[in-house]
Length: 309
Image (cartoon, rainbow, N blue to C red):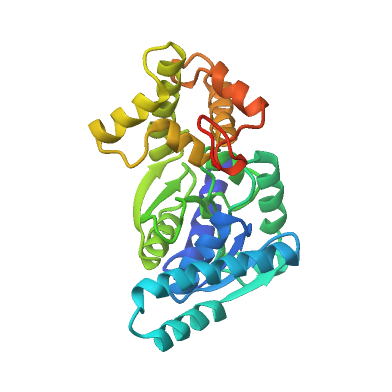
């Protein structure tokens, strides 16, 4: 009987999102990722509400979006400055800001979070918004490492919950990983795929596994490079050069680690190791832990594996 009831619920709730075109988007988190997603969505004609905890953060976010748009215009409208300015204003008109996530969610087809990588904070956010958003509203997370199903568990719309993992910098990076859980309805998944295409991105379909596709391959690769260096089998400089010239990568693993943030790398590895402690690919690195403990996170702090001025 419980199974039958659940199937009826799934059928009813799935029909609520069938053939829904995502037009109104609420993005929670005005940081670099959230602002980047907001810019791309607004540039493709979507109505965007960017949400964060205070107006100062949001003003900085909008200023960052405007600066990014000016760089786009400089290349795209080099010979047409008036058209370029018109484009900027048109995009900015599609962006509104709010410090009230609940209110913003009430008018949205999609609520996408790009906040701190903390499971409980994400669960609390979506658990609260679940009571306020319309039945058809799809929820999605931009998490790069946390299980989508764990985040979705705080809601009653498991079939209308998925992942949209964008890459930094969002306006430039073409890929979006679209993640479906075992409970995500096909209608929801299709809506997220179509939304990604509307943004001019190339979506790939992913299962709800650790790191999805890109990070599941990328993070262990970086960690193995660090272990190679720890064993004294190569200098970090030579390892970076080898992977750039030998594999054609734009950055070596140590350069990429500093760009991503060593604190982020450690957070991902700690989470994966806790879930699968016997997997050698997820084994911790003493050097990485030491650098993070010293506050050397990479480019954002001025020092990581390398020093930055």
